[in-house]
Image (cartoon, rainbow, N blue to C red):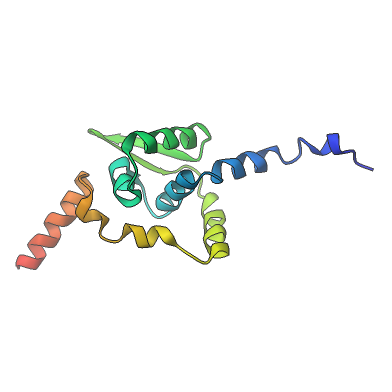
Length: 130
């Protein structure tokens, strides 16, 4: 028979992952990043949270190896570091029956000051003018 004390270390990695995902902001950030890399200002516009708070949560995710980043001038873009998270995020969204991030992301490009969104707005304006 297996004693309870022998079982405690078996699921440590799963427990660590679930604790990271149990934070609503971190989960929302991962749901955003499952689609594409994004800068903090874009996530700020989607979630309506302060940049400093998002940066704290991104630091936790980066330290855990869940996100990676790259610098482009003044902007830092974040992406999922491990694509194995995508099926897990999909399963969570499916289990709850809602994909709330997509709803929040509508029209975010109009509010986000990042270079990528600015370029998209400029292209749309030129296309509309033509």
